[in-house]
Length: 506
Image 1 (tube, rainbow, N blue to C red):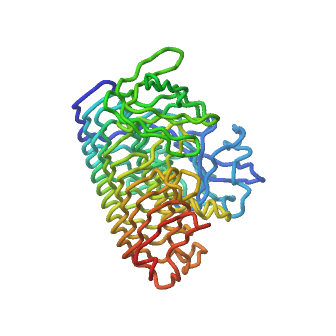
Image 2 (image 1 turned 135 degrees about the vertical axis):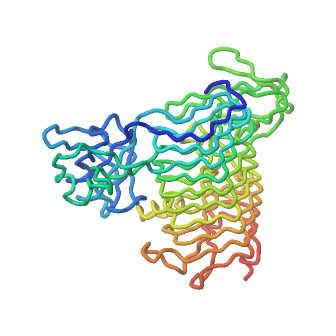
Image 3 (image 1 turned 120 degrees about the vertical axis):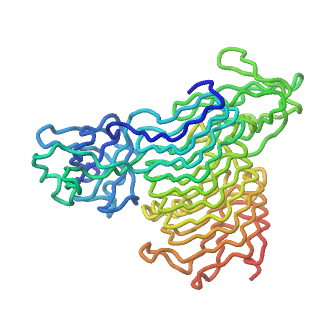
């Protein structure tokens, strides 16, 4: 949909006629080269260079992914594919003969909404999409989701009477259902992101939804950004151009009079936040101007990010949402004024809630101010943290992660402001930490329950569940911890300042 308003999608179930991804059983591993036999009923040849995951038998979430490989070949005689130079394939315990493998598909979107307003999605179920299940951008009012579900679809029905025995060498891939039909294995993926909202002037609202099996995030609320190219103090005119990251050249949502612009440098240092007095003008050659209420100073020798705070998904809501068995994050929150409440993050491979602005990695950005994470359950998350032994990855693997900045207590680098995390339960973690904090200013962490990590995660149960990697003005109080915990907070390299609360003093 493009340019639509006040549309209700209700009572629809849909998905692709054939699953867009490829999945199968690994039959040979040689260094970083992996040969696998695709499951019947799915694509049988690797197309392009998709990312993917290795799975142990019977598991729906995985320790290991492979974000890249160098090339692939298909053997028509054996029906197998080989991917070469697959990342992490040679790391002990990550893959092996008999393991399962899945690679993303390349089919299109499910629901697409560009420059729309007031779209409602109710009682809609989607079983598969090669890309995002839902994507909205530049909406005045982002969609509202009620009882929206992303669920695993049925196993493909196969032609009966054929010999499928070679598929069952390591597990029962091809079986007979209760109606006597021959079926392949159930799908290992559903979609890419279940919801993806970019540059909305009013944030999306996701209520009473079930999102499972995604090969990426449950949700992502963010904004495109631009780069400053000059400022004329005489007229208070800021000139900016597109971002330029990973080949993307995109712009922030068009500024209107009264919008707020945020400027910060490439290292995450705050420069200015002020009102726009003249709307966006296209002055040619991919250059655009706005006039500001106040003068600003642009530093030399460093890129400056230009973000429209009024086209960044402000005021989003996640209420009573279950995200489970997906391969990335529960929700990426890159917007201000949001609330995540009464949610269940169950066996999410990375973070349950990721609050990392990512401007250096993607064209989608956003620090989160005035954010609340309340009364939610985080169970069995951050399994990907077990991939690595280095501390930096442990720091990223957490049920809730805040990132950005440079690991300091300098408030100019702490742009996640006024955050409250309260009433949540954290249990069965795979990761060294349950909460990892960086670039935060005025954060309250109160009345949460931190239970012991999983017994099979090779973690010390007496370790601190809360890691501080940078921040200022952090209150930690009224939380409960498992009896083994000796001291609940690790302030690494003393990167946090003004840390107070009963949990610190006791």
